[in-house]
Image (cartoon, rainbow over all chains, first blue to last red):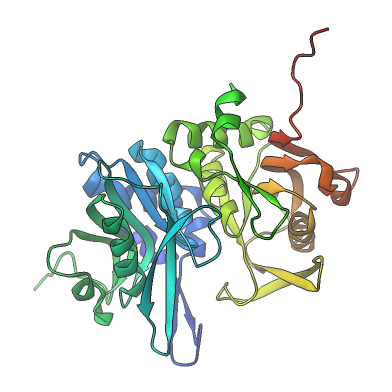
Length: 182
Length: 182
């Protein structure tokens, strides 16, 4: 089943800079069956968890988070780069390789009764995911889990998110072997 | 029916700059029924038109475009700011009030057989919509229509798109009166 999604992920060498091999998910989006399957794989472990808000991270996270929210009958919360959200926001800063960046969420987007699922396309070093988790917890909501289409397992993102997190990824690189035959 | 969507659009004064009253759609997104209705309203006139690709404009367009593509059984094409798409792109520049900006699409995202629906959250002056239409037509695809959640009718966007376009907006400001009583 996942094989058809793996086949559609395109390796783009030297993007966004030399030496990086980028995992391009846009061929999945071009195929509505694959897009639907990707959304199903992202929400599958959380269908019975009473998710009230899907928290999606700008911008590719919006592509997966919006359908995920509709499938889960949950509201959609946008986490954006500074200055993009119009009303009052809270902000979390996080470190990049060189310098820092920040993410924002509307202060009234989540509250104490909410059970949140954080959705993004890729878990890499975990910087944006950790900042998003901070924003959600500062709002008083409970994080039920974090779900990604792709996890780059060698980059330490899962460890950065901490041991108490439920983290799910549909596709992993390097690829897991689901069935090892002797 | 539309009244419930109108009620959820929030006016934010002086955003992104003094004197502008911003139409904030994030309260619609927080309510999954309203988000579902917004998507339904966007695709409704185009359900029987054999749309093969929904073309969504970064970044709020992704939120509406992804569910729209799934509802229409169409692929999703991302139109992004320069430097965001990893593979080979074509580019369209457009004028802003001061200076210019550009949008890009992957060259292999659309082709001659495609019937495209362009989706974005707001039609204002029409600059990004016109640039997106240019990108779609340069790819060889046919534009069946452009659909927006909101149209700011006083800003001339519809005229900028040209007389031959099918343009749909679910909500309009100033509001249309659907029933004029004497």
